[in-house]
Length: 477
Ligand code: DUC
Ligand code: ZN
Ligand code: ZN
Image (cartoon, rainbow, N blue to C red; front, side):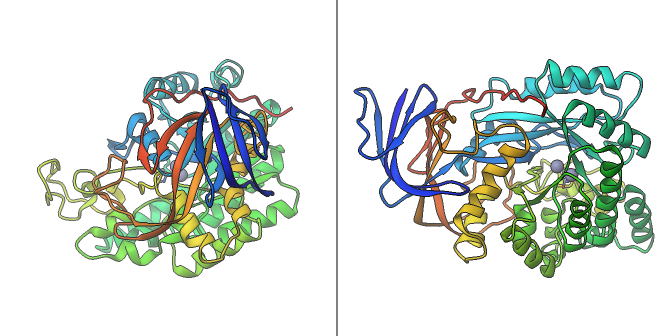
């Protein structure tokens, strides 16, 4: 498989040049002017287009047993949607229940992707309890399963959430092994007490989700994790930061020497809390945790992204159907919007709405349209946040996140002139709705390659199910 991309405007996290890119046997072999096309090569003219390194989403859920249901995508639909949006590598959160063993869980999560994934992938290994078996299991996760990041939840106690002693043990082990610990930071007890209070007061609609886990609850979670990271020396990465107080708590820890990466997600940069207030239960489409915040936090996040405080923009893609799944939390509990919904007959409330917003397909287009086109971020920051930093933090660089000889030929030829509209009617995700229905987007991934194979051409799918490969990662020295 030989591919020559001619005359593209190559944009990486720190460089810009117009040149040809030659890809042979899955990797980039030359970058230069007037490269000779080998006889068998497919040649693509990228004149007037950008060429970006394949984008990386470091936080997705594809297989997710959660809140009494399962997320809607499988690896076939999820990875196809990712590629249609320009994302060539996914890092999925492996989220076992407290009853499951982390090593068995990684093997199960890997089996869900194998044969179905069309993009490349790896996992963060969920640590949802820590007992006398855990050290051995996690050492095998790292050494045998080639995973070099863990995931912990300070929220969702009773499901994924861990206790402080377990958090300490996980971070201490991670530090010993050279593994990064990613963390969902919200104080679980404050969330459950506030949920109880609101529901008792009859505040049961989706608009009460945000007040049940306000910014202070997230900031406390971040500060909490920072204290444990400082005490253990572990490198950490806070997933889906949604607001100014959370980012500030982490920044303060950075100043104390804590090694910490900061992620936000496309939904926080583009939606605000008014969406969860939409009438007739439509707000449920916008329920995720931490919640979508007031507009002022969005402005702060864009600024923090532009100045480099925020490392990455992910999605926390967690897709649930509106009709059959989000309605599990409808206050009238029996209200069926279509035949696929099975009413429970029991009173429900916002705490039962499966948390998550499908967005793996839209992340890059939203970031480009609302970030680059508006001038909030430059092209290099765009590439860094949507690709390169994730590769650096999670041990994939320079194989991924870079355009250089030796890097995988994961390339996105981007047409900046294209404009279109987001719609569930045309998306590749499996959900019955889009949180961004009708939104205009400027620019699109016209051609997308994974290790030199063209998966998207002229914006249309031409990929191959199962082409994606697991990416082994080594811990840091
Ligand atoms: N938050 C979500 O909104 N969905 C999945 C898990 C999470 O932490
Ligand atoms: Zn989370
Ligand atoms: Zn998540």
